[in-house]
Length: 284
Image 1 (tube, helix red, strand yellow):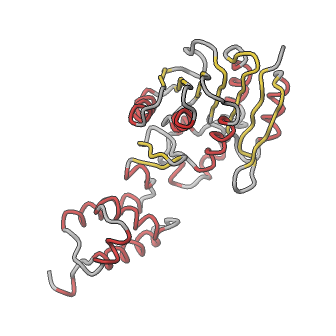
Image 2 (cartoon, rainbow, N blue to C red):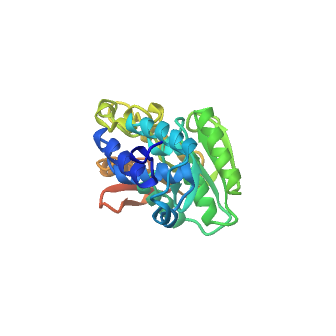
């Protein structure tokens, strides 16, 4: 390899950023760096101290392969196999939604109703990030995660076990195969209107599991089922907390009110958008 063609860490990273920008990738610089970090094991200090060094040939080939996949809009988290949520690292793949920071609002709301020792049910658990994060913060609580996807449940169980949390998982279409009663039920169900899905970013509409996105015609299909059926699984005075789309706060609040829930709260995310609705099971 001649000097003109030397693939230094600096030149490789700069070329990677340009490539992702040309592919229309948002945060191209961040993603290029994270892929380099993932492949090489470097941190920023190591990189700046050695940026003029030639990149290992094997690492370079692996980096180029991942870069091309990211350029085709495969989500970064699926390429590295991990995503951070509520300060914890979770395994993810194409069978589960990638955890979002906005969903941490659901965890915060759930934690506000727990003091220790409660039983928690997480419907549409996906990667198990919500339930695992809640259990991580509440010693003495136990939880069950339910999902219709066996592949998602495999990932959820792996995440909970690796983080040492007290969780079990069951394959179930919402409550169909769930047993027992719970002090708290949480859910981030599919809530995107079917006709809107094709308008989403390619990373979402082409790569994240459609079954975890599609909330049917008006986006409220799963809320109706969950809100109605949750009463049969909640202990008296127990809470139901659900994540919602930014424009669904009033509708979901009304659905809960009509089903007899009290102490209703709509919480906003860091962008000031409605994100979570919660309510307490009241008498019929």
